[in-house]
Image 1 (cartoon, one colour):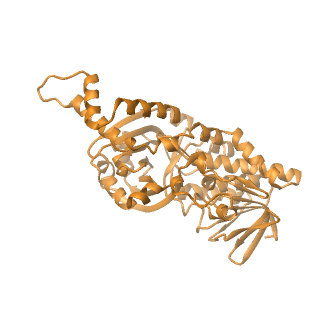
Image 2 (cartoon, rainbow, N blue to C red):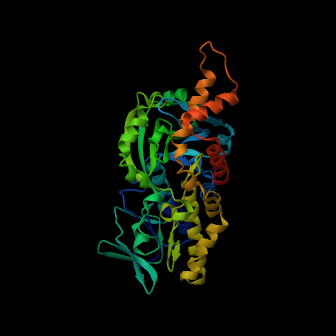
Image 3 (cartoon, rainbow, N blue to C red):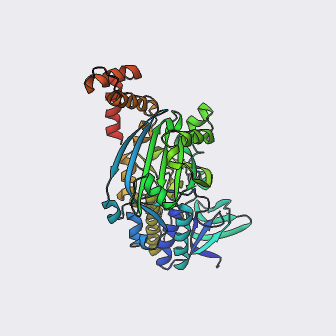
Length: 429
């Protein structure tokens, strides 16, 4: 490798690979630095990729990528201690339109990194970047151990707790209120068992988001995604509340798996993988400064994620940010200018794309999702109402309106609380 390259990218996840592939295709010399032994090695397996933006980078990517199942069933579940209330939406056309796929990140990220190498990217694994080299206010490379690598531009794609962005003063030390801790298991099950239990056919898949008892009343939720021969399942809890309540995430995970409505779905499965990971949850409030002279911040390092209670998105935002970072670099190289103003073009591109538009649309979601009633009272309320509807004891039944008011009274929620939460939810989600 020469003493200096065009671009150094720190982090071999989706954002870093999208940037690297875009730049290498245009003939730039790109070094992609990954701390793990291979791209994707530090990512916990499992998630849903809304892949329309990836299709722009790799047309018909699903033909060659290691995707698992086409998500045709989206389920939102309210759990009480013993019950589950599902909002279950199915659309078989999602498979035909390639709307979303479940993926195992270890496999998927490695595949994408291979595409980068085929395009000419130099992938360097097992390297920890100590700091970004800065001269006269401009990023000029990185320091890894005692080795320096120099470049015109550095792109940070090093995850939700990007210490490099913190070192540069682009963001403060992470705020626990803006992060969540996720605990995830990958549970192996035969393909036929998965399809039977989740009422799926062929390569159809299901994605569940679960609130309420899943996290013992802590802000956050549970998730479950079906893969070909495994299930990705776990809980995500806001870090500030985990610290405040002294909750042990591993114990919450054990309780979640033992829930009477969850245990039958994973029964007989083999544990293939277990781990914990920090994820961005602060929305617009946690966005760092996204650029400086000679440097851009992408993906989770930029806090790019959307969680509106129905859908959790981060992968598509990461890919888009990587591609827009690459566009910024290409424009800057054409002008021979990598200064602060040239790098601010990246923020403009993000603003014009769906990335920051969606972040702004759901800017109120993080605060709304902290509402305690979502994780305790409403799950119990739904359980009371549905039990009253379906339980028959040989006594006269009341109208639904009367049952609902009685259930509200028993749950301790006022009609005003419901009205306020409904209004805030409609505006935030």
